[in-house]
Length: 114
Image 1 (cartoon, rainbow, N blue to C red):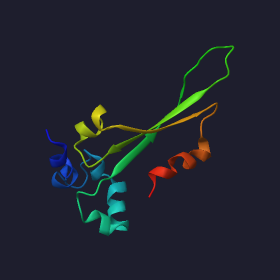
Image 2: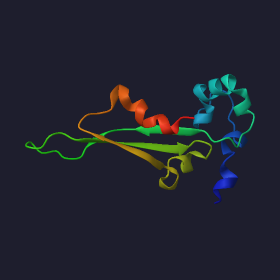
Image 3: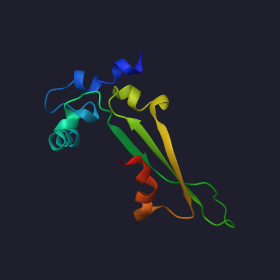
Image 4: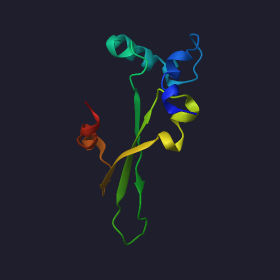
């Protein structure tokens, strides 16, 4: 299956109101379309999802706690089964440190924001 042919899936496979199958069926997507109509008019514009969750790499009583926060970006234009599959999940950065980034995460995410 070619990825380029699937990049307009969210536009070509719209569902009736009240049916939620993909992020494009949700209220947040529709609100974004209303706020940014120039972006929404072109279905090939890429919409990205960003997620992060920390993990403690060294769990030893004598060691200091150390965390690592991977930040993963995925294109939401694709069908649901492709959005959440490994080839389309991109590790954009790793946030290292002894603590979670909390309010300072914006410093790490700045290169991802245009």
